[in-house]
Length: 214
Ligand code: ADP
Ligand code: ZN
Image (cartoon, rainbow, N blue to C red; front, top):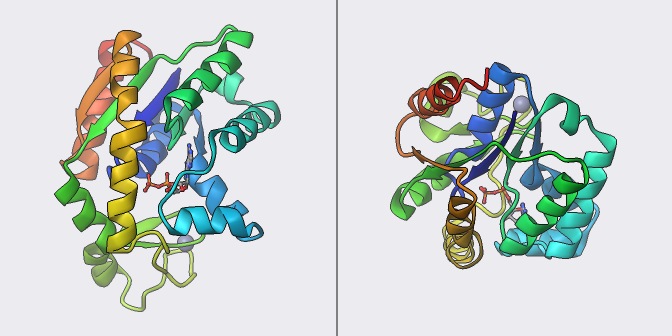
């Protein structure tokens, strides 16, 4: 089964992608994680991310094709987190999937309003192992500001208020049109992303069960 997670920054795409992987045994692809790794050696990508702008479509689509070549997404099924983010990326994905006669089964749109996502992102701390915490759980469970893996938690450089506002503007302009785009394909499913993590996953899980995908 093949999933896409769509939603504003901070809507919980990464968290739900992990839940989906655990439950349904699919492979995940997070373009955000890929670019956070690439930016360590690439100053122009670093600059784009830290100012909240998008990496150009051409680069993103090249990386996507490359990832699909190297990994077993086609065999295992996949969940895409942070991709596509523009209509032209969605078209690039279609080209790739059509070549292999594969389709996306469902696009979950995690709906969270912008006040809530700003609050969440300002509380977010991350670890280089990929886990992320919000300050509440992180104060309680991680007295020394360390991840359960042992590494020190840090703030993402694009998780500052000014940059978050820019990311939200870009989301409205370039990513939100994907909601209508996937509605037309009849595969968009609305999820109330403002609830807590397990509650959001329950909605995802019950949709998958209802459709008898598993
Ligand atoms: P969030 O969903 O919290 O905004 P991500 O971790 O998905 O963050 O992405 C972080 C940054 O990486 C984005 O703001 C953007 O600069 C870059 N990025 C990630 N995915 C894409 C994409 N599909 N197209 C263009 N840029 C991307
Ligand atoms: Zn860690």
